[in-house]
Image 1 (spheres, rainbow, N blue to C red):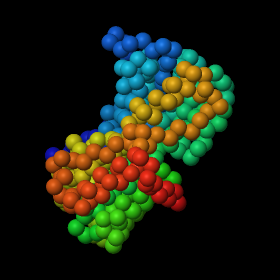
Image 2: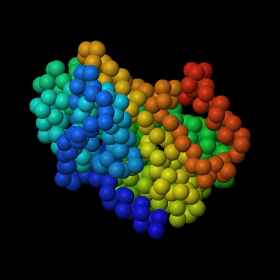
Image 3: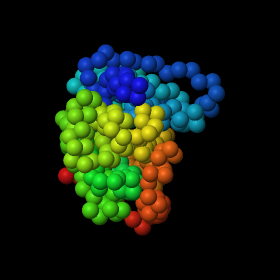
Image 4: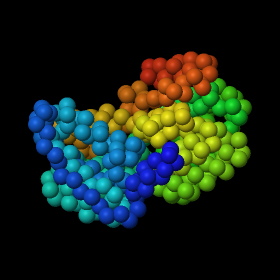
Length: 342
């Protein structure tokens, strides 16, 4: 039944962390909210998403972050278009600009060129894209995904749970955000077990769960018993394998414990509310342009690690103690997680 549940979720995912398939776009207009206080500047936000808002991961956390700021009254409207292929995003991005939205978030690495081209035609509109490479220009902001900070902490937990000393890592593609988070995961584990090693595969696809599961199975034959992934297809494949073989997985930027109550050791949650907050503040203050590079990490509650209570007992006390120590040190600035981008 767990396997069926994961497959159903996977089929529902038309997009991954940085990619999408050719599914039909779904556009949703803003819903009425009579309970939230009105936003001072009436900030209207539009999200262009590669997947669906119920994916427990990349797309859902961005939608929920915007909705949270709407509840706070900092945003007056939130609209979104789901399942937008990376090569066909102009219609959605340009349409929102023509409709007068104040902030248009192109939430995929692959939307960058399109967002840059469209932003030049609407100089009074704020645009942001998920480049993570300090690729801001004009009125197009870039926002970081400093996942590596949180995945270092998750790696410490993995180091305290592995019995083989071998970890399995997978990503859709070998881009800086993926490379750095997987390497940080291994480094965290090595703080607990200096002999720990990693088996990494970049599967060449963001959404192919079958391919990702095959990569995880290959890593398992080499001894990997705790997994980490960058991308929704990779993480779903790992969770499915972990459920079947009694291994452990780590969620991808959302709480995916429900997909593996007995296998998801920890969840790294991207708190996009705190990522969007400074963008909204800059729009209100008139300081958004020239566009900035927004980076909100662990110290600013932009990334949160959740330990699965059902599996906490599987993590050594030494690892738990080190996890708490490093978490505090990252927050107070006395420890810096290495950023290994290639």
